[in-house]
Image 1 (cartoon, helix red, strand yellow):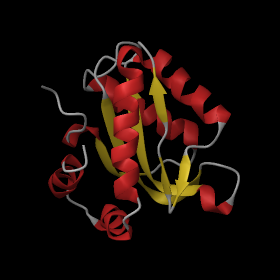
Image 2 (image 1 turned 90 degrees about the horizontal axis):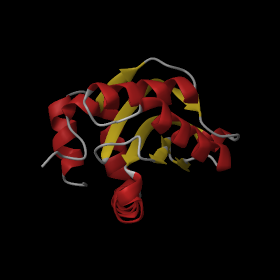
Image 3 (image 1 turned 30 degrees about the horizontal axis):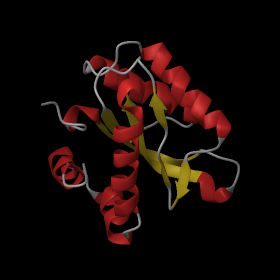
Image 4 (image 1 turned 60 degrees about the vertical axis):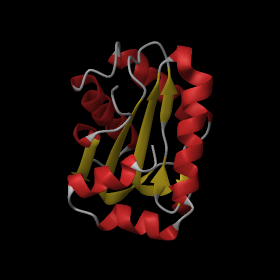
Length: 149
């Protein structure tokens, strides 16, 4: 069984400075790793969701997500940006930790909610968030994230 996140879906030194370029970059990583059926359909679903309301959750974290048949395998890509990026309208919406979720439409209700719930529970923990900002080894980070998902 394919894990929801693996080392190939992690980017630790992302040097992009806007929401759309980050979403496109992470979608390309997912696509390159065989997790998408239709990259443009997936990107469109993420961008449509972002237009409704920012997916910034505070503390420098955002969780953009898309539910579409353009997704083949439920997945999470993680990126840490070099600088904080404006994700919403306020100062509290600047982020540098991005968890991008991809869920096939047929699994949308169950998988999507389980992933968001598990991630939200961990993101409340200040120590967990701090570790996300300082770990520079993908192996260590994937071990930490695998415990969540």
